[in-house]
Length: 559
Image 1 (cartoon, rainbow, N blue to C red):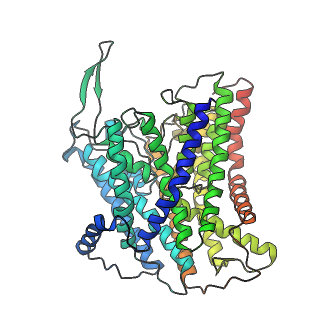
Image 2: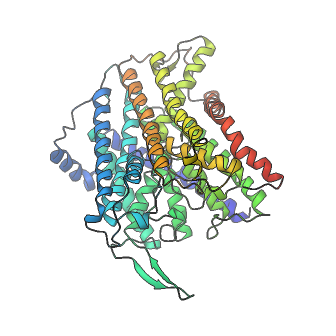
Image 3: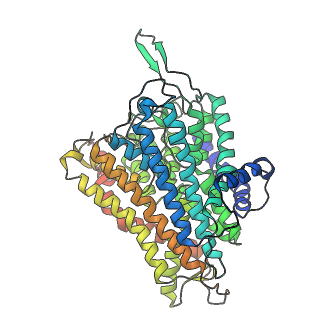
């Protein structure tokens, strides 16, 4: 690595850490219903939406009502996007005259964007009309991100509630997340990206002649608006098939820096928001630096692997415009967050770097993670850590003054087991079915990595692809779509049950025997539990894939 490479990583980390407190404080004030700098600008829109939708912003919901509203709203979004794809040929804003999307691909895409996964088994420029991209995919990018925030808010209120069942109002949380956080930031980023050359137009595709005299069709479209929210909302769905490796999505070094920063910006700031909302900023910072430490460890290992191997070999699919460092930094950020965007093909990474990407997702994407979803996933690990610590000292475990008992631990374990089972069972089935194996482009451990990564990405709602696997088949579209739904709501529903259970519990005053959760000891335990859970669950599968491939590569074997 050159000095310039080190500087890029250091500047990125410093900017991320520097922006976390102001944005986190701003979001905490928004979610607590306080006045902010955006209140005079967007307050009228908030009140208008309440009137148009008949929302009583003073109405409180318990966990069951809150969860039902969330599930019905997401079901409606899924059905709308599914039908939109099946009928896009007869709808307007389709200048390329693209046909209707096949039912299995439409199901997969609807499940993908509704669950904030944004896995894409299709090429955007040859499959989706402008209308489908705008009112289907882009809208779901906003709504799925806001859904993650609402669950985080419900769980936070359950933790700080003083013996009452209310968790707030789902519709109010959705509206505030959209108009005060996601929409303003997306408009700002879209304008900047457009100034850098990211396309934003409703014009038809353009025909051009190459230097060799061949005819070429250049796809266009309203990309900047979707790229902004795909990054800020930790969605990741590309407007074009090459995603953020496409020069129309990611044209300049500045655009690349802003897009990768946007992936982690809101998830990181929400950790600070959490510290503000629970009245313990020190604990918020502790969670932040635990996440940051794991992020830095994975980044360092991946960079070491890439630079120690890539100096002697050239890997097809790696980023050549912006360099290896930017490819690895993007890969680490996007797999730590619930973001499926890529600016290089992960199948072209060294086996260890590809293994880091896979393991980041397998951890549950709790290292910053998706917007809202990463933090409530991390809070599940926090509750498990507190419970285990309580068992060690023979004291009833408590977190923020709330006793952690059987029901909460059962829900935490369920939220860990469901996505993990979807990954391992799904990948195991795919490894023995000819219809699934026929989609592989590689054999041996690299082929296993292709399958394992696909089920990991879908079940943990990441959406990035290892590349090399033809996933646009009926088998993969249906099975991976089901994995996305299990991975999303198999964590959301337990989180809501935990929120409801904790909300009605009495807050126990802090005493001399209270286990502190804002010191180095707790941080070390939290990291240990997180790593152990991931290693015990997935190490055998990772050993047969990336680790074996790495050892064989050192012996000169490739796949």
